[in-house]
Length: 145
Image (cartoon, rainbow, N blue to C red; front, top):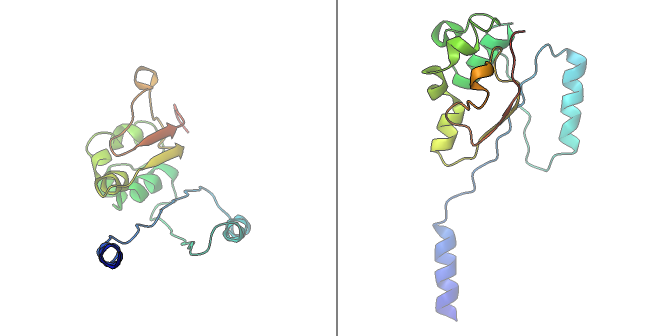
């Protein structure tokens, strides 16, 4: 019995620490009053949850989203505007392989995107297209702005 107890303690000592759950909420055109409402959500979340504010380098939606997904400035993502030709079409392919979703999935996380991806996502002929790195995908389709 003592040996089993020591084996259990030894196993716990070498167990990997629990990985944190990560939730990123991206919002556009958020004013200060709305930000305070989001901070109120902390009251309903469990203890240990942190709210971190981040700002991006472009005031435009799609360049900001591309930067958020990759950590790169818009001159490196190729997404300069919100037009479909400048957003999804510029981002698909090489850039999609460099997103935080890919890095998290490689680290063993399950990833999911719910809501808006980029303007111009999923033209009619490619409605089932899911970018690499996403375990769950529920992105809205968009033909433009």
